[in-house]
Image (cartoon, rainbow, N blue to C red; front, top):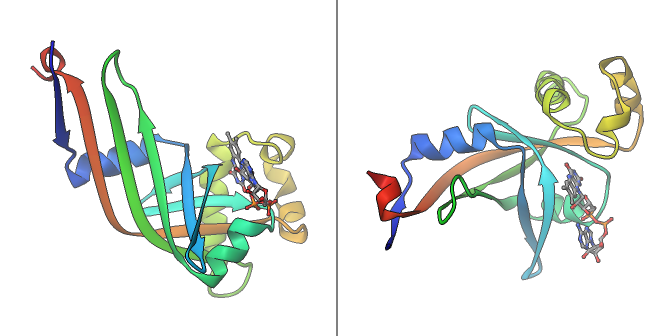
Length: 155
Ligand SMILES: Cc1cc2nc3c(=O)[nH]c(=O)nc-3n(C[C@H](O)[C@H](O)[C@H](O)COP(=O)(O)OP(=O)(O)OC[C@H]3O[C@@H](n4cnc5c(N)ncnc54)[C@H](O)[C@@H]3O)c2cc1C
């Protein structure tokens, strides 16, 4: 049984990103890469996430060029992987970003259950505003995807 590798179409990449909620976020500063696992929600070519202040946020503020990677294993002996390059944008609660911030929250609170999310309810949104938590998004610039499958699974 042989393996086949093919490129995913842009539409396949977007569909996979929209169905995903977990990935690896890479940023870099002063020539040093940094990768961490994150939860996110993806809609209309934008990835949204939620964070405490820390290294990744500081680095993305310094250098907004970031990369988000996801993968899955749809069947035994096969995998799919998507790499997105994009630009970090913080979503502060100001006139410019308020609506996008609310949009981010509405997408994230539906899907996510990480350490702080799990303890919040929609009624607690004002707490998130008052806390050091921050919302950000990644505007997609380019995307690529690859699928590896056993030959008999492609038929
Ligand atoms: C399943 C999963 C989902 C997650 N979802 C989110 C999310 O949605 N949003 C979010 O902000 N964070 C999420 N995290 C945590 C995230 O991976 C980081 O640990 C966290 O955000 C802190 O990153 P920071 O750059 O602010 O680190 P800082 O608190 O600033 O700490 C920096 C230091 O800690 C080390 N470090 C930081 N994170 C990790 C790590 N994950 N593994 C090993 N070393 C680490 C760095 O190498 C560096 O030395 C998730 C983690 C997991 C496992």
